[in-house]
Image (tube, rainbow, N blue to C red; front, top):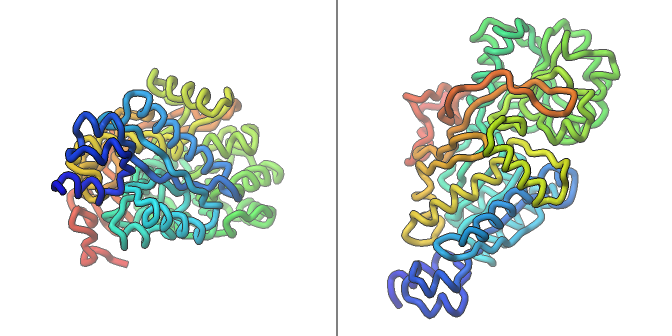
Length: 418
């Protein structure tokens, strides 16, 4: 057996009989006959399925477009889709099935940090590769995950100073769902608030999925704050904004500034509940470029819904498949290790603009933007960086561009000050 043949089998590539006949992985006969299996793992059922189904669809759309254009080195991508069922335990089981039984060299998946944390041991123990598309709290440095959503310095380092200096708001009420993402985002926010001359007067949480927001909104109302920083997640976003209006609060006087609320939550709650509030994300459907407009139209056609909305995690789910494709084309073999090495430094013109995988920490350069929600349910972009900014997953702990904590060698724990 040739070296290339051994690499081919080791990589978990689904090889057809035609491909097995070829001793060279990228030879013409192999390209014509082979397919590449990948895992697609999002929740298609359960409470998070409304959001995660859209990430699944965007991933499948990217795979469809790549296949229609000739595939990867002539090989078609075959998606093995699994349902995480909005349950971390199920996520772990499905990830194990994809990696061990199906032997895929890469899985695209997860929306919440809870599900990412649930599958992480599978990928690290088996040295496999996971592409994670959602904005998250940082404080993670895995050689087995490629992170294509925003980290706190790409959502908060622009947002907090803007709230204080442009809106003139200095008294923050921080509110979130009770798990790791909102709590870590609050930690970064407090540092930035104090650094920029503001103060935080409360830091409150309700359980993920909580729908009774009367007491919390009343607490906000009587707190003396002049701005609300929301890290509320999932269905709770809808309940929170509706209760906010029901108690007579308005965003022109006491605005909600959010790190999670996107087009899909606005559509679910009704835009009248969010008009005048703000969100910080690298991507909004309203980005006024031909590339993004074409992306929105293709997505609507793909899901057969002329009113479907696009949002940050959805867009990352889409472009990360193209970054993976470029890495596979560069790699000498289709193994998780070779793909990971090849994806370092990969660049792509995504619907949000130019993106790049950081060669050190496997996170993504993205362009921070702030939008104000309008009556049509779209975010009007009112502030944007001129270019993508470096991802710093440990910014809350003192990480800077010139002092990286997470590099290709892993996390330098000596730099952490917890």
